[in-house]
Image 1 (spheres, helix red, strand yellow):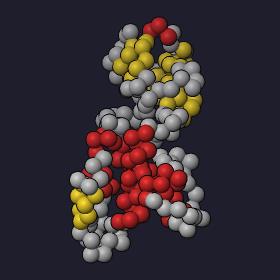
Image 2 (cartoon, rainbow, N blue to C red):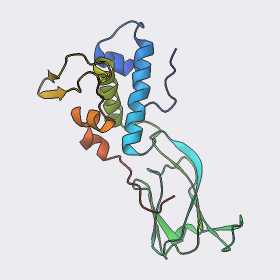
Image 3 (cartoon, rainbow, N blue to C red):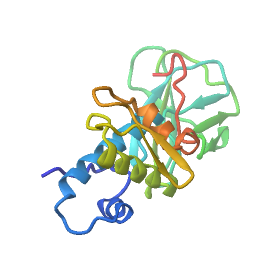
Length: 207
């Protein structure tokens, strides 16, 4: 029996309600499709959405007044802590930076310093929590849509169905024997606008 991922972006109950499914005969398949849909969204957005606490990350000094953190939004679950390495050596010797020397944009995941973040590799140490205690409703609904699509029209199993109209929306499916990429599925379902808001852009040199 498939187990729902601990970081799944929707619930079995919501997918079953959307698809009009009662009973439990399809629960295993639906769970697998929810997990697949979750991974598609995570891969597309280049991020996890569930809350992570007390994460420790290291950043290089870049002679800029901002540190762009790898994850967002920054939550208040635990105390945010910024530290600076006291030596150019790879020693675990850090001093806490006073909170009046920087500002936190929690939604953007950006730290604005009063002075520039200079220094060598891994000069800056950040301890923080990020993510969502409750998955945003638009992301959850996107996961429902993708899971439903995969349940009804898995690209690997489409036979003779080229397109289907759902209200004012027309979906075009890959022919049997071919496969649709995750981006194709998201585009077909009209979810790009929703998910692009949450997509993380990987900056060259960010580790």
